[in-house]
Length: 241
Image 1: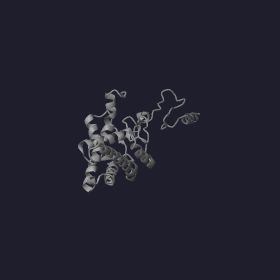
Image 2 (image 1 turned 180 degrees about the horizontal axis):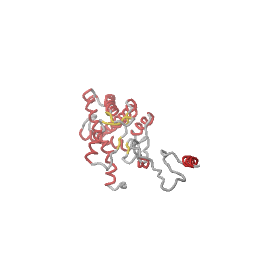
Image 3 (image 1 turned 180 degrees about the vertical axis):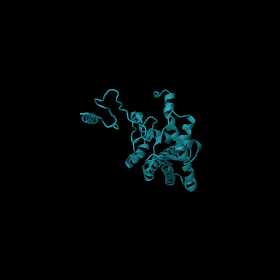
Image 4 (image 1 turned 120 degrees about the vertical axis):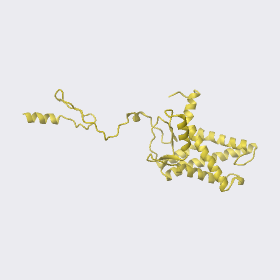
């Protein structure tokens, strides 16, 4: 009878490794707690509560999870980034600055020249975005998105982080790597300007100057992506999170 009772109690045990392990009908004082497993990674319960970003978002907010990207996602992300209000504002700023300083592309200083500069800025920005995100990010298996640090970090740290994303990015598997997609994409976009810039702005030297200014523009864009929400909240245009 004693052996039968022991077998019955053993059969009523739920496996101790199960998430809801418990003992049904155990005698008083019987402990069901298993030894802790120190070789298991801790479960991040809070990560499931973070919202999932869209696969076409080029900026991942600090409180968002980033979905894995397919080659199609990257292609569509690059196409989408060419027609956003943010990119159009960049065209106006770039063309306006070059018009005020009479810098490249050197179309002159009249009203027609500003229109030419605006069109050239749109082509240059769009081509660089497509080369970087739609093409080169797939070639090098890199993640073309900007991951915002957020207000939990210091301002200086965030500035340095944003500026260095021109040179550093993530692979599709999440490892840090040289941002070859952006570097080669911007270089290809700069080389393409020889097809529509004035002859005065053609040649290797001019192409490298355009490439350098493109990298500076990319760093500035990352800075805007990092601090734009803070600026909107400061101006009371967006609710504080």
